Image (tube, rainbow, N blue to C red; front, side, top):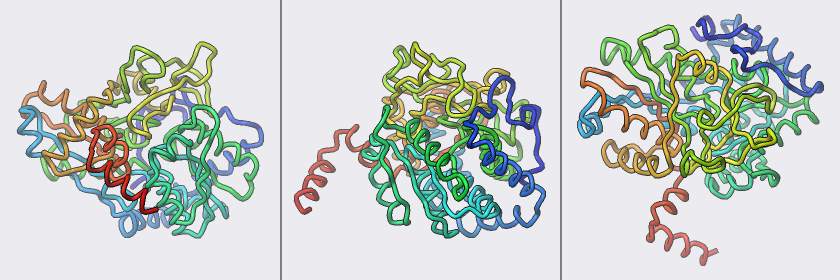
Length: 416
């Protein structure tokens, strides 16, 4: 069952997780948020809704995704046993399709005709465009101009799926600006449009809705690891941007006190200077931004600060309110991986296990590479691979200074 699980870390049921969360939204959006909350409350009681959601996950998305024992990497690191939850084997190449299917069903219940979405790495945009095509919605995706350039393959696929992709040219031209653009659109078109928000952030009820849909990840892991090992893991590791894949893995284990949880943020070029990284817990402060209260990287005036990450999906300056609460309560720990560590982890995973993961996911792998050798061999670590690396070919080739790839791209330019 998806919707009958509860923990003491769930907050007050009104979107507050301790001091974090809430609904700080323009007055014009309050009716839409209330409509969404009411639709979700009704959906949770509707067995047909749950059955349709689970059937779509199975027959369309490709769930359950496998939990794979990393025999070669485990041997190389000479420590705890490593398992990878391979979310890249979902239909759109990442975990995002899971909550997109859930929200698409809600949009259908609310009789919406159009969905809008924001995206950074492009995986959420592809998933939103996919469900729009599946359910017959028109779709507009907002994407920062910087991210459009470095994630061009995903832009192409969104367009082939029928979505209009609008480059956002203000601010830092990355994910935070795409969120702002989507919110402006929603305010203008609220009656006909559902905002398919892409993570466990934003005003209530978005963090709770996406958490519940993504909790399928942890639910599957629990069943799979018990089948493989006969017990629960000792550690869970996930990369953290807004936090949908992290809370998706963690949530079903929150009541299991012996299971430790580690979120890995984007350390970028280093955490010493704001603008070089996207580690909210190394330099961030509590604030209210884009409809919710959480920990954000901010400048001296309280505005969102510039961020950097080799991965397009982890450069968001805020973090989901429930994850901030879990950090405050000591239930989850957070660390970071630098761009160099991420690229090294990306290469090591590919060459030892034959898995080409997303650069976002490589942050979690980097976290595991640091942790696993310090643990005894009877410990078990589950790492969430949030997506596959196809989308990152241009970034990786540039970072690794691959001459053959550069020459190939030049030849294609001449052909055009």
